[in-house]
Amino acid sequence: MLKPGGSAILATFATEGPQKCSGLPVMRYLPDSLASELGEGFTLVESRPHLHSTPWGATQAFQYSRFRKR
Image 1 (tube, rainbow, N blue to C red):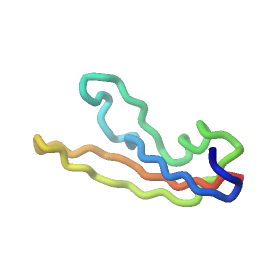
Image 2: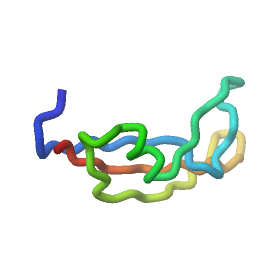
Image 3: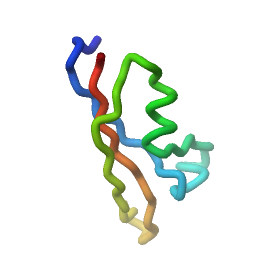
Image 4: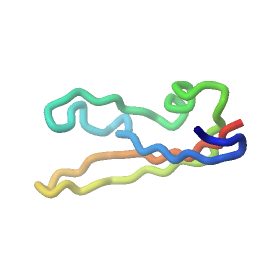
């Protein structure tokens, strides 16, 4: 439960991220497509890309998005 005006920060795989993680298929998002998934109750405030280095030396693209509840 998030009060109106509250913020939610979601981290997802970016669209250029891997198609699978630990052998399982994943969803990949742009900030705007993630906002569409959340619906009209949330407003996208900001987003940032992040490149994560895995323990085995691979790089995975993530994106962090902050939303405000209306």
